[in-house]
Image (cartoon, rainbow, N blue to C red; front, side):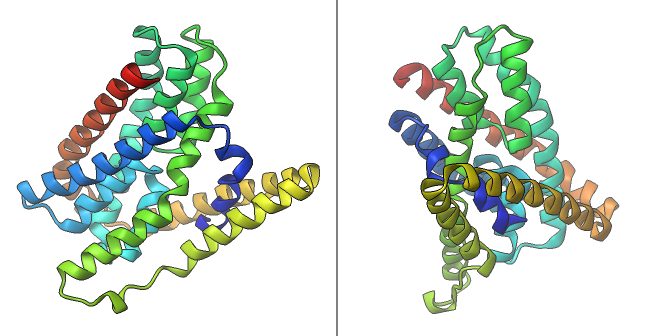
Length: 266
């Protein structure tokens, strides 16, 4: 599922994002992960749980958690709990973020960066853009919202590698012990090959991309069902109750900083 998700992160999609928007989103991503790790240390939270909270909020929700978890050898209970909490906040965000954009009277360009830079899943971003347009009277922003969202998804491999090195160093391991997960390397390969295919054969490449994206979504659904089957519900709820306040605080800080930078710079 993660490998084929690379078909979404193609050059033609990423090129739609503005340079200012990209810089803002990358800065907010770094802030979100750093804040999560810092607060996790302050409340003596497991390092892997704090890293997953930061990753899930800053990149692409469940997909990011499932990608980063093996890279940092996260506990299954922490992974399951973060997935649950992130999914809950993503659902809230579908309604909250477009309402904020409309309430503050953001321009369409500003709304694109806010929605694409704050919501967790691609499945959150698309309905939020629709709500902004159809329910709150904003302009159509779906295509560019996805461009900013894909900037975050494209950073998945970088974040996974950096976190794996940080964790290895903290555990006393050498840099030689850090190995990039094979499926993340394949993710990059699919993104690069798909970009070349769309450039060389726009119509045929677009059709192939649609097939791969649909297949990725189907496989991710199966993977999530598998996670649910392996989950200890009582343990997940116990850990999730502790993680919910931290995850909410980190997301609120992420959203606030993003909104501030948008109002100042976009």
